[in-house]
Length: 194
Image (cartoon, rainbow, N blue to C red; front, side, top):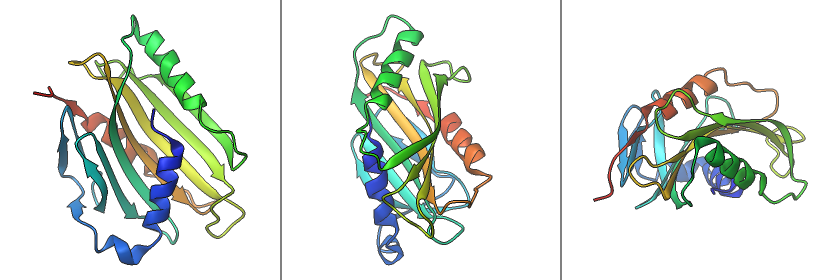
């Protein structure tokens, strides 16, 4: 399973805006193609390519307000086979709950459910936390996640993770975050590996 720590580390990378312009750029609305999966980068943004390897893509951009960052992540990971979608849901929930409990984060909300809008076996998550280790103009930084884990429809021992995340100062809502995350997940297409 993908770690929250990875997202946090990448968000810190984004805080150095001077380096963003030096990274390869991808226009929003462009389809990103990786082995086994593709998705459309959220529109109306220019995305810096933070990581791009065979089985992982991480894009980042500065937000609309000071100290706000957005990250799109996609990765592929090994999973056991599951006898039912409910069994996969249990697997994803337990993996996400296994994050280190360091006291740095305070959970505000965490919703995980089977993603009925897709024909593949997927678990959608929406999560919000306070990060007391990163302070962007307050006592903590707000972190939001909107993503999914899926069983690859052509390779049942391959898991696919896709997520939009946001870090921002407290009290600074981004009303388009959920719709942007929803569009990202809907844009995901699966393909074979050969």
